[in-house]
Amino acid sequence: MAGGARGTWDIFCQVIDNYGDLGVSWRLATQLAGRGHSVRLWVDDASALAWMAPGGCEGVSIHAFARADRDFVPGDVVIEAFGCSMPQAVVGAIAHANRMRAAGGGDGIPWINLEYLSAESWVARSHGLASPVHGGAEAGIRKWFFFPGFTEDTGGLLREPDLMAERAGFDRATWLARRGIAWHGEPIVTLFCYEPPHLEELLQALDRGPALLLVAAGRATAAVRAAQAGSHRTVFLPFVSQGEFDRVLWCGDCNFVRGEDSLVRALWAGAPFVWQPYPQEDAVLGAKLAALLDWLDAPESLRGFHRVWNGLESGNLAAGLALTPPEAWRDSVARARTRALAQDDLVSRLLRFVAKIR
Image (cartoon, rainbow, N blue to C red; front, side, top):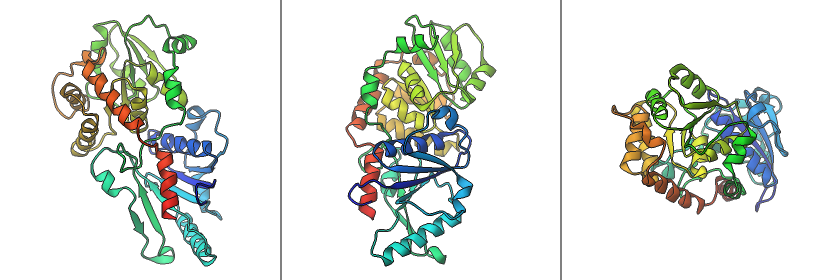
């Protein structure tokens, strides 16, 4: 697979608890397929694809993770998504294939660990590094670390080639009407969250003015139902495909998102957003959050809102800001999106990286 030629990619993914790993892996697989590659997605629980990608994707086939240890023969590139601990037989198969290819004067098979997304400064230093295997039958092969990121010296962000053209032509009134959601021009807030400590304050703020709240299925719906009080209009959405989720965010005047895939989709949506990283120790969560806000060049009001929303400091959420976000919030996101759009997308960088390390 030299010089940008089409090839076969194996992507290994394990679903942890919130489908984010699978969501990123599926977006990567479909975008590779869109460029003419053949992709085998090995996943331990593919059930979420029934709603995430109901139509499947030409060029992408789904395989049971556990069956990869049965006479597995690697393709041209192997992706280990988010350190999912591939079966040892798979690692052995990569080593064997590399020895056979080397004996014949051919290229080796790149083994790439697609890492989690962060705006922290260490990401650029770690992106593209190799980790050699020192012992056993696999000695001599290397795993390469590929870090998504927000700057030119990282792996970039997933973005479909036609995404921004579709975003520019989107009509939210038509989209909402087709789904039977009444909208009268009031501010729209979307909510895709874990269980934020100040959720009730946000719901109370919604009661103080006309607003429409669109709540994603799953943990966000459960959290809102548990805290629900007041008279604001709430629409509980079903599980939707990835393309439909993008359009939910395109409807929002302010988008509350969680995890990594939805963070990137909120950035492409272009409206002010509030991010909830995956719950971790405060020091880890705080560092990830601060790094993103620094990259956004966020105003202090947006930084403070994030810190309170994520439980990193006490204080009044001032949740009414989310209904009509200040112009400074809008400007911050708009400038950040412009910077990100000026860079190559993740798949373009990944293809160049593979060609370089062969």
